[in-house]
Picture 1 (cartoon, rainbow, N blue to C red):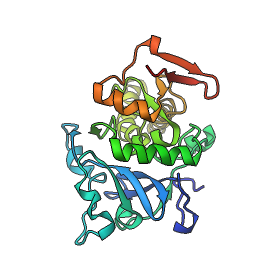
Picture 2 (cartoon, one colour):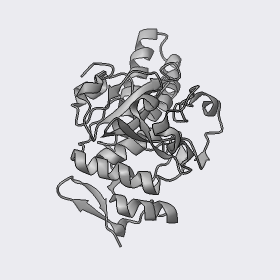
Picture 3 (cartoon, one colour):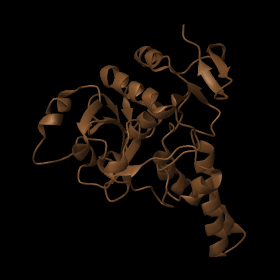
Picture 4 (cartoon, helix red, strand yellow):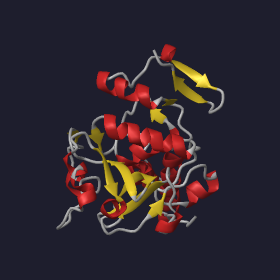
Length: 265
C-alpha cells in the first residue's frame, strides 16, 4: 500500500474490490465496486440529487457520467438508468484516470499517515461475494438521493464493503473525502484563536494538523459510534420510506462486528 494512495494494475483486480480514480485535478475521486468481467457498479449524480448550495456543486463533478466523445456499447444502456446506481465498463469508470484500490482494516498509524481522506478506513470489509451481492442488488433498487457530503459514491462503495451506514448523517456521511474537504477549513478556523496568545506560525500549523487528523480519525466509519449494520434487502425499503434514522429500540449490538445492527421488521 502506498503512503498517499494505493495504485494497482488491472491484472490485480478481483470481484468485490472497492476502487477509485482521482478526478477534477485531484480535488475529488470517483468510487465504485468492481464485480468482475471488466464491470464496475458505482453511484452517480444522475437522477434525484441534493446540492450543497455552494460553488462545490460546480467543482465536484466526478460522480457524473464521464464526459467522452463516444459512449461504448457496454455502457450505452446504463447511461439511461434514472436512479444513479449504474454499471459501467472499467474504461468508462476510470474516464482516462489511474486505477486505485481503497484499503480496509488499516492500522491507526497508517490511517493517520495518509494526509488525504477517501483512500482507506479502519473498518473491516465483508467477504467479496457479499460485497458483490450488495452492489448488484443496489444496481436494481437504487441507493437513495445523491448528496455530495451525505450520500455520495464513496458512501455507496463503503456500504457495499461493510454493510455499515451512519444513523444520523448530520453534516456528513461516512465518506472520507468529504471529511477531508470539510476538515481542512475547520482545522484552520479552530487554530485561529492561537493568534491571540502566540505568533508562532509553526505552533499554529501543528495545531491545525492535529485538529485535522483528529477530525478524520473520529469521523472514520470504523471509529464512529453512530453507525448501524443494515441488510441490503432492508435498506432500500427504509430509504424509500425515509426510515434510515432509526429509534434506539430498533438497534441491537452485533457480537461478531461489535457494531449496532438494525433489526428487520
